[in-house]
Length: 356
Image (cartoon, rainbow, N blue to C red):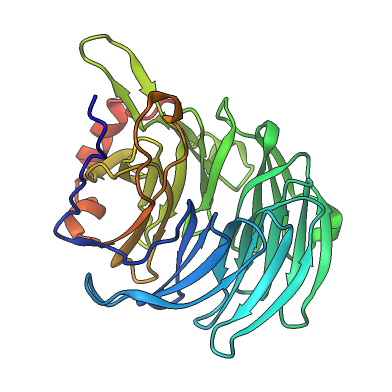
């Protein structure tokens, strides 16, 4: 085995960002209504705002820091964002005025954030088994709600908040009435730990990924007929043709395209594009240097941010640690938009690509 780091070449329709974080990347997030600005959080304790033009002129426009690793970040609008991390704080930052406000804290590290634009509220999920609702306009917490276990992932789905916790629990809350408790309490249909949750653009359902190379497609409506439509499928796996051994990789990240297709990224360094309605993989990108820890489409769907960051999966193999990097890919119609007939769709069902 060579002791030198392998060389990876970007595809012609993508470029690599200059000046990436100096430690593991945790989140990439495009600005709303723009593909020119990207927010990035990292284990190096920083939150960076990049201005994107092209391969040679992208640069860090602004940055601020936490006292420990930053685990998540998101835009509120074009100039303002929130972030959270191991320091237990939820921070609000105004890039235009270079103003930082600590909204508050949890008792343990804060794993993830979501933003409900319709209600103007930020939600934080923590390993202290709570979610907190923050009104950044007045700078305070307006609600704290217990969860069944440590919060690992969550996403806003219309007026609902979907929270995934340890022990494979999934709770659905309604923003209009948090005080009555969760609207639904479910158990993930996947057998292993939840890694990511993302809502459909039409808010009718959501997808869940696990550490065992599977994705589940779920629907919000509890009606039994609607629930018959849910399914799960294997992905991010590699079978050695000579030995027959199958390598199974965690699915670390999911991002929806405005068209309803979605991208998945795994510890195998691969990005796949899926159509959840015809149950078909539309395309697979080239292999990236390391695990795909975060993905995000721009609001117009023309660009995809891909964060490749080593998760220490091969620490005991004596291999060099790949450099953390971020790619901006121009999304082509051929790789992201399914163009098959209904007959093709029926065939994909018959092939049973997705395992119920």
